Amino acid sequence: MFAINDNFSRLPASYLFSEVARRVKAYTDAHPGSDVIRMGIGDVTRPLCPAVIEALHRAVDDEGTAERFHGYGPEQGYRFLASEIALHDYRERGIPMDEDEIFISDGAKSDTGNIGDILSPSCRVAVTDPVYPVYVDTNVMAGRAGRLMEDGRWSNIEYLPCTAGNGFVPALPVTAPDVIYLCYPNNPTGTVLTRGQLEEWVDYCRRHGALLLFDAAYEAFVRTPGIPRSIYEIEGAREVAIEFRSFSKTAGFTGIRLGYTIVPKELKGRGADGEAVPLNPLWRRRQTTKFNGASYLTQRGAEALYTPEGARQSRETVDYYLGNAAVMLDGLRKAGYECAGGVDSPYVWIKTPDGMTSWEFFDYLLTRHNIVGTPGSGFGPSGEGYFRLTAFNTRENTIRAVARLEK
Image 1 (tube, one colour):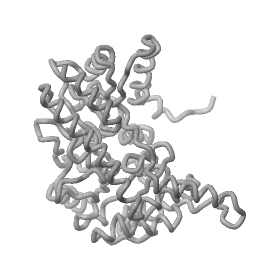
Image 2 (tube, rainbow, N blue to C red; image 1 turned 90 degrees about the vertical axis):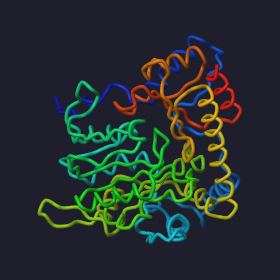
Image 3 (cartoon, rainbow, N blue to C red; image 1 turned 45 degrees about the vertical axis):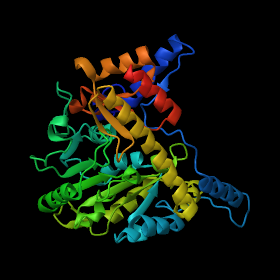
Image 4 (cartoon, helix red, strand yellow; image 1 turned 45 degrees about the horizontal axis):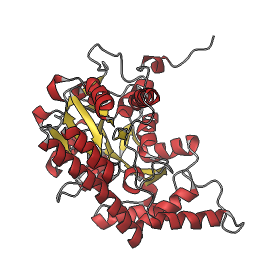
């Protein structure tokens, strides 16, 4: 018989959010009509803003005419959108950016998972703990993770704990990894890093020749003055960092799918012959070979977000979710819960009460209060004893959920 990639068999049987969905379905099937409030998976509830809807309709009309029809587009994205991204997300903030450093895709999850294609299987990896599971699982699939140990960690991955004990700020690595994943504002803890703290990471990568994979999917939620929204606000970051961004949470694109990745031209790795190799053309080669590009319709919709009306409307959506997070944070703290996040982020990270494990608290909230969240242990060993709630439901449901928790 033919051989398989045994690395897939080494993964736990179920992806975290699939297990959450399975348990919720089992409960709702057994309790039809139950009033379950879902605050687990990071899906959104606000509709696409009017500027995007209008742009999508115009794009559909384009596809209905021979003169304006669009078939296969450029795999790295249309320049009409890349130019808006370069101008408004970077240059207007004082960050140099060329359009051909922007790679538009169907979402940050895809890109953070696929970026390993251009890296050596021998690269050593470091992740914050707790962490978005895709970072770890895709390195397991690629054979970089080693073996799964009894404590839930993988033997070849360095885990950087982020707990209340260190203020949810990870310490610098001690094993000299080749690749480091950072996500800020953080999923799942909802915390942020200051400019000084990010400077330490960039300096570390420059000293050690490490690659920093910076997931900035939630940058639009930052409201605190002085907190960087892009890793490229830090001097020297273009030499060491790839940045991932998403339209999912900021503009409600979870269903129509769009994100982008920045690969600066200065960023270089090392080939087997010891020579420096730019990563930008490697990622371009990967995308043109294995990806057909995000749809013309979706990219026209995203283009509208950079108009004055679209920018205002999308900011109102983000402000709405931040308002939900503030409601959650205030109510939970009044009820006696220890919480983090919820200020520059749509996630609130709470300490489970009475020594309950993360999954025990999940089952308790589901069966006793009909609230769905995400067990912290699913994000890594340091997430045990914590629980993530999202601010992406409606204001009404957020208030109702907090009232249940306060009881």
